[in-house]
Length: 92
Image: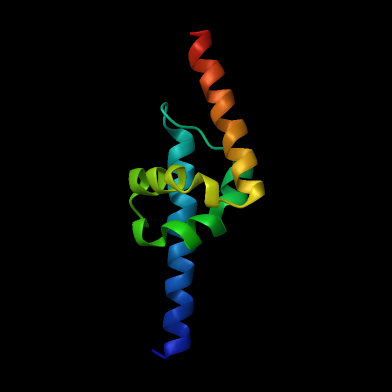
Protein backbone atom coordinates (compact mmCIF):
# COMPACT_ATOMS: atom_id res chain seq x y z
CA UNK A 1 0.00 0.00 0.00
CA UNK A 2 1.40 3.38 -0.87
CA UNK A 3 1.98 5.96 1.84
CA UNK A 4 -0.54 8.39 0.34
CA UNK A 5 -3.25 5.73 0.17
CA UNK A 6 -2.55 4.69 3.75
CA UNK A 7 -2.71 8.34 4.87
CA UNK A 8 -5.99 8.86 2.99
CA UNK A 9 -7.52 5.74 4.55
CA UNK A 10 -6.37 6.81 8.01
CA UNK A 11 -7.89 10.28 7.56
CA UNK A 12 -11.15 8.76 6.34
CA UNK A 13 -11.19 6.47 9.37
CA UNK A 14 -10.62 9.39 11.72
CA UNK A 15 -13.39 11.40 10.08
CA UNK A 16 -15.77 8.47 10.48
CA UNK A 17 -14.71 8.03 14.11
CA UNK A 18 -15.42 11.69 14.91
CA UNK A 19 -18.74 11.58 13.08
CA UNK A 20 -19.69 8.40 14.93
CA UNK A 21 -18.65 10.00 18.21
CA UNK A 22 -20.90 13.00 17.70
CA UNK A 23 -23.70 10.78 16.44
CA UNK A 24 -23.42 8.63 19.54
CA UNK A 25 -23.43 11.69 21.75
CA UNK A 26 -26.57 12.95 20.09
CA UNK A 27 -28.33 9.64 20.75
CA UNK A 28 -27.54 9.51 24.48
CA UNK A 29 -29.90 10.93 27.04
CA UNK A 30 -27.14 12.78 28.89
CA UNK A 31 -25.79 14.70 25.94
CA UNK A 32 -27.28 15.93 22.69
CA UNK A 33 -25.50 17.52 19.77
CA UNK A 34 -27.32 18.49 16.60
CA UNK A 35 -26.21 17.56 13.11
CA UNK A 36 -25.17 21.20 12.77
CA UNK A 37 -22.88 20.86 15.79
CA UNK A 38 -21.37 17.71 14.32
CA UNK A 39 -20.66 19.55 11.09
CA UNK A 40 -19.33 22.70 12.76
CA UNK A 41 -17.18 20.90 15.35
CA UNK A 42 -15.52 18.05 13.45
CA UNK A 43 -12.46 20.12 12.54
CA UNK A 44 -12.20 21.34 16.16
CA UNK A 45 -12.35 17.75 17.40
CA UNK A 46 -9.47 16.84 15.09
CA UNK A 47 -7.49 19.94 16.00
CA UNK A 48 -7.97 19.83 19.75
CA UNK A 49 -8.88 16.26 20.66
CA UNK A 50 -7.48 13.92 18.01
CA UNK A 51 -5.61 11.94 20.66
CA UNK A 52 -8.97 10.99 22.23
CA UNK A 53 -10.54 9.59 19.05
CA UNK A 54 -12.51 7.23 19.07
CA UNK A 55 -13.24 7.34 22.84
CA UNK A 56 -16.56 9.21 22.95
CA UNK A 57 -16.56 10.26 26.62
CA UNK A 58 -12.96 11.50 26.32
CA UNK A 59 -13.74 13.47 23.15
CA UNK A 60 -16.69 15.07 24.94
CA UNK A 61 -14.59 15.94 27.99
CA UNK A 62 -11.81 17.29 25.77
CA UNK A 63 -14.17 19.49 23.78
CA UNK A 64 -15.63 20.90 27.01
CA UNK A 65 -12.15 21.43 28.45
CA UNK A 66 -11.10 23.32 25.32
CA UNK A 67 -14.33 25.30 24.99
CA UNK A 68 -12.44 28.59 24.87
CA UNK A 69 -10.33 27.24 21.99
CA UNK A 70 -13.27 26.10 19.86
CA UNK A 71 -14.07 27.89 16.64
CA UNK A 72 -16.82 30.47 16.95
CA UNK A 73 -19.28 28.36 14.97
CA UNK A 74 -18.65 25.22 17.00
CA UNK A 75 -18.87 27.03 20.34
CA UNK A 76 -22.12 28.73 19.28
CA UNK A 77 -23.91 25.54 18.24
CA UNK A 78 -22.58 23.55 21.21
CA UNK A 79 -23.75 26.24 23.63
CA UNK A 80 -27.16 26.33 21.95
CA UNK A 81 -27.47 22.53 22.01
CA UNK A 82 -26.42 22.38 25.66
CA UNK A 83 -28.90 25.12 26.58
CA UNK A 84 -31.71 23.26 24.79
CA UNK A 85 -30.75 20.04 26.57
CA UNK A 86 -30.66 21.83 29.94
CA UNK A 87 -34.10 23.34 29.39
CA UNK A 88 -35.52 19.91 28.51
CA UNK A 89 -34.06 18.41 31.68
CA UNK A 90 -35.39 21.32 33.78
CA UNK A 91 -38.87 20.87 32.31
CA UNK A 92 -39.07 17.25 33.47
